[in-house]
Amino acid sequence: MKFAFSTLGVPGLPVPEVVGLATATGYQGVELRAHPEEPVHPGIGEAERASVVDDFKRAGVEILTLAGYVRVADTTTDEDAVRQELDDLLRLARDLGAANIRVFPGGGDGDPAEADATAARRLGAAAEVAADFGVRILLETHDSHRTGVDAARVVGTVGHPQVGVLWDVMHTWLGGEDPITSHAVLAPYLGYVQVKDIASAEDTTPLALGAGVLPLAECVALLAGEGDDGWVCWEYEKRWYPKAAELPGLLEAGRGYLEGLT
Image (cartoon, rainbow, N blue to C red; front, side, top):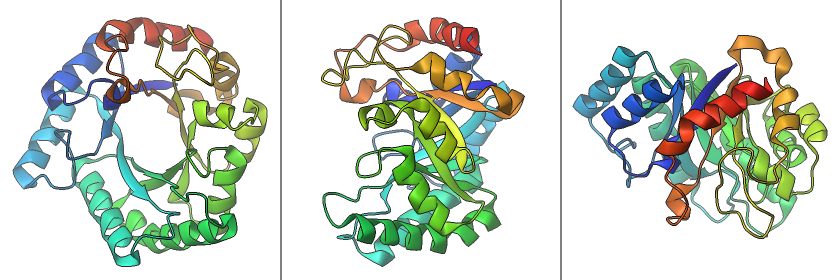
């Protein structure tokens, strides 16, 4: 099993420092938050893209995913705009050598069937571009589709190998779904697992791994059959909780904790 961390935990940190942090703390990969607030996003040019590739290649660290913010189940957004966002993120992933892009559902409180159909249609339309670029689109278990059952309902309809699911264990837990069920329904589509820890359903301030209530041991144990190719990524949501402890000082112990579960 391989381990990564998300740059959501170190907002705004320059790429060379992100890479240095990964190598210093023993992580094989990084999930890059692809947002204009960050150094890496679809608006950067060719020279900047080449520099990012060089930084990661020299350190032997993988770019696991570009975590984007496209909301594929949002029925209120323009089709062309969503398609352009997806294409831009896929192109950036291709240029950087990232294995995946992350998208959100974002279906809101509307008709669930309409949200499902909208997401499946958009993901299906983008799947061939993703295949051409050698990138996988991962729908995160989040917001309107926070359980594994919810996400699998969409990607199962798409039925394309370049469209899968990113299992955020906090959201499936908050959705009342036990890890065995989540894993069972997501296994055919699973890209990788995103872990974190929190104090309670009411207090989602990020904590060190193992210090909270999420069933991390059970979730990681379910991945044992994936061998050395499976990824676990620590998403520490420092960006949304500025008073939380700084992530860099927690990373090495967090990796050790995850290794102890495998």
